[in-house]
Length: 495
Image 1 (tube, rainbow, N blue to C red):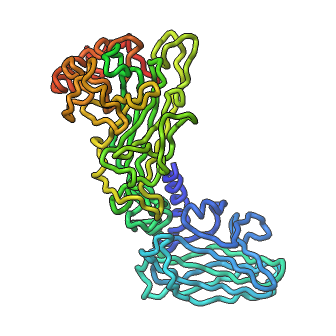
Image 2: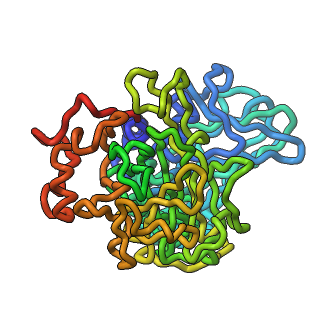
């Protein structure tokens, strides 16, 4: 919408500005000074008026006032590709101006100044003195300044400075003409056309910078580029349970924000808890495998109750772990509201109202401004480093991970290899069941529906068992909405 507005305004300005093939013109007839700002003109202590007593020609003129000590007003052009010729404008001293002088300057473009592109090396073009003592608008005069051949083709701005002396006096300006081609681009903060802008000075141009106003951040790098994925847990491990995989269901998105050097500044983890089919007070944690707690400056966004079973170090991570471990929430009641009325779970029984779900954001900072906990390159945190887990019913030692993922240091190791668990000590065997290696946690790379209470996942997703039993070789797309893949009547989809 903003670019469309710019195009519209430029169309209006162009209609006036190119009456002569090599001149731009500003006669105030757009009627709103904001429109001129949008077209990259700039003003200081200058207003636009339609009061007939102060309009020298047409419907509008520009005004600046005076004072006994001298009052300054400025009009600055957009960026131009200069042509030789004369800068001309009409000036009208109203109400008995004692003295008025107009100074003109050429401001070259400086690509190293990424704030506004203006060089501090101005070129003085001269001044024009306005006849004093006029009390009516028939004293309008033409002021002019020469643009030399040496400046032809240069990119720059023209700045007109008006110094007006006299109490309660006004100076009118109109019909400004400047030799040159309009060369500003309103869509890039009015920098010259084709120039690469780096507003925050981090070495990454704005068009490529996801954070153009923050020199400490440059790029978003999503581990979930196609949108949110879904995590689903079965919480009766090491027993098989009802295998409905709805004891905790949540969507997640992960963004590694990097600086211009390709180092991770922060890890943004967006979590949408959607359902909790269990009667347990389960928690949810995330280990970032390979990143030590000392490499993390701080963690924000977790939802932890006052009487938590967890202990934390100063940066917000759980203490006692080899790798950085975030407890996103220590009780599902912190993030989902129970419907009451005898419902066993939340959003898993269609006989009870679906409860609202709300996204939460966990931010893990490796750097904050100039404060650096660690220099971690982008390729040091991949999806393989993402190790989410369920903490069962406030028992810290009972944690359930994705198949093949390692537990944290807090796990109760005596549970492995018991009941239906087939963990043998071989790393890849963790959290795989005795029945063809079936898991207790699932990670799907898109957001999918989940099962009603007591409905096995094999009932809702008809290809799931074949996928799991073959170690993922058959039907790797088991979760997709293909013909014959789903039984919709047993699926729910809180979002």
